[in-house]
Length: 513
Ligand code: XMP
Image 1 (cartoon, rainbow, N blue to C red):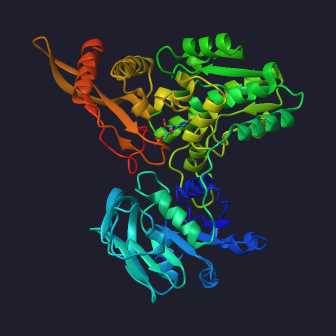
Image 2: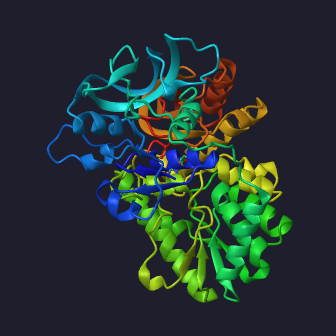
Image 3: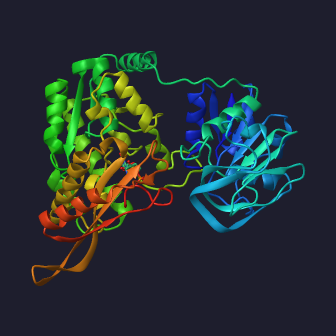
């Protein structure tokens, strides 16, 4: 197996997931526990992940230097490259220019790490890579040579081929890095392993369903169903496993998209014959959000209100298990690993009070969204469910900047419906990860008829992504944007300006709050 030492990067698990896709077993360990954990394993290679720290600082996370002396191939990614430089006598410094997003890597030397990047890649040749760093290697350790550089950094890829130690400043695990998967395959081959493609299979899903059935026994199970892809697929998996022993609870927070509640009822109750309990809690949510403007506070309050309502309903049903549609990015973005920084508090992660006395069932906890969709397809779910655009747990509240009021919800709902209708009409649903409207809270001057108008600014966010650890803003056709804009300012009379968000992630997250 390959051991991944985690320095807290948002993409550590993505490395593991990419390796799983090519049948390579991995284990993720904290830097300080490497020897303790790997004692009984046959380790073929080590990957040092990225991380938010500064490798040159005194108390920075690092590794025991012995790890680099074991004759086991090592690949350092981003912060991991910097750790290698720092530990082996090179140096790391704050970058003059920080890089977040795409960059061009010029491959300057042949290397085992850069083999088979399609025959058209001759040396020197450029590939597109994904960067996310502030610091950089400033001095190479002895024995290393540069194998790739960018316009901004001279040591973007380094190697000591004799010791099989490699460092790359970019992220091969992110889909935006061209040939990223091949680079990981190359590293696996350097480790003496045989990478083989391995997609998620029907047998794998059957095993998971059997697992759920066995762990639940004859107990009652409830599930928080939001109508989003994740909770829908998680609930349907459990429904497949135990049928009527399962009741889905849908909490109508009033923060859902237009028409959501009705549609959900139709799909799950009528088509799938699932027991669905719809709880109207709109007033409770609005009341709890009164006067709150801080995004993290909003998220926490919404999370708590969901739990309160769920707890009340769960008591009535005396359930032993609770199904949640938590997927891997929710875990990692809520600082689910020891050294990761908290980016946003995802309300569906780990927020259950202990006294609630239910056991969590999270069948999708280790999967990324595209894998979840593949699971849905293997369960024969229709595309309308498996390929729905995701919708965040805190709903429209995190798309309303400032205090959430019924009036603002009404405005953003109406604008959002127009955005989604026009995107659907233009046949663009499948090319986008998500598309929605944001109530920015900025009022601007306009003119309506012959009068001055002072109205709201609506922003449109449309992104493309595969696993949402990174995403690009969509280059929507101008005519579609124009149609959306004209319809919003005409039909939503409180709005007199529409803007388009052209920020990639990183550094911008998908949701505004
Ligand atoms: P960000 O804004 O973090 O969003 O780039 C990444 C993806 O996650 C969704 N999202 C959430 N999903 N609970 C969820 O279930 C949450 O609290 C939450 N916050 C963001 C977001 O819509 C995007 O698809």
